[in-house]
Image (cartoon, rainbow, N blue to C red; front, side):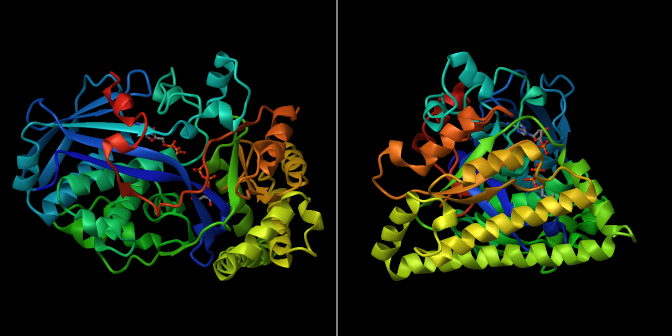
Length: 487
Ligand SMILES: Nc1ncnc2c1ncn2[C@@H]1O[C@H](COP(=O)(O)OP(=O)(O)O)[C@@H](O)[C@H]1O
Ligand SMILES: C[C@@](O)(CCOP(=O)(O)OP(=O)(O)O)CC(=O)O
């Protein structure tokens, strides 16, 4: 018997390499999952039969109520007119299609039985998903990682969900992944053991279902790297053929279609686990409210297809792709070299920590190459931005990245995903036991707090080592119980 409470968490993402290219199946992207996660907590409620209440206790007026009805065609999830949260397409579509999938796997009666007392669902995200700049200012705290760790976990953002400033870590993909997976588990459409393993059928079904719901909610079939990393963790990602989803995107929902499309062997994505080099640390910055990803994507794709620029674009994409693949290979080589000789590896990291990457060649050709590859990717992406007339790495970000990367112990970095003004990522050496004052992270924080061109705040997130979505226990996550009890 499944327990009455089901909780699934799913990580956020940083697309370190492969922005734009990853939209095309020819080109893989390198995506890193973050320790910052979204949590969906499903509890049997003592409410009315067939009522589902979804709450986001981090926002004002964030409660959505649904009534579930049944007929021969399956399950209908109907939003209640008086929901104080108004409409929430992402949540509604996740409920509608996941419950229908359950009814196809089991039966409509099984869904009805599980909803006899209704359900209470709370969705919360780690503070990193939303900008904490205003919060730090009002608390009078400096913009450092230490300050961020003093903010209440899953804190109330003081605004409505529609007004929040997101940090670009993929809140909707992490939310949909955790919600769809939690529903599939709660309704026993997949088993916990099967969900726990990366190659499990249950994990794959959760992935396919989350991709579908996310595409439908976004109104388009994107590359899906964000959902894939929310499900499977850090990886080299190659997208699925959009055609897999054709019947469902066209609204063909005859009984059995969901199950057959989502279980189909036509899903041809590939997800190859990857990790950042041991004893390095991913550092992310929330820079400023900025770029609208769809409009950047539209312009780049138009440039790529235009007859006057398509040849140049093709060549440039080939070069970017080579650099991206090389980055992935080098990350793997460094992890292997750590496996082979941990002491020597640690010694090397200690030496690199006190020198700028420009001077690393003699000490570690492998880390020096990694630094150069990240710089080369930046150069090529900037070139693409110039040619396409899109601010992929705006000048202000170039200054911020250059000043950060020239610090001792910083491997490299870039603008994640589509680029723009809103974020940067860095990789820094992080040898064990080094006092904070001597860490590259401290030097980076100092550059950021003195940066005059924009207001830069670090995020708490590091790379997630847990591989993607997982079931968690309420009392194991500090602050989660308190957050979901907040009304
Ligand atoms: N905490 C939350 N609770 C409920 N719904 C959420 C929450 N966070 C995000 N969403 C849903 O995801 C949508 C945001 O999607 P989108 O703008 O694509 O964000 P992102 O770029 O972070 O993925 C919101 O409109 C809402 O429907
Ligand atoms: C351009 C892209 O390849 C990458 C965009 O990555 P971001 O991380 O910038 O995305 P958002 O979460 O939508 O802000 C588009 C895609 O792959 O879907």
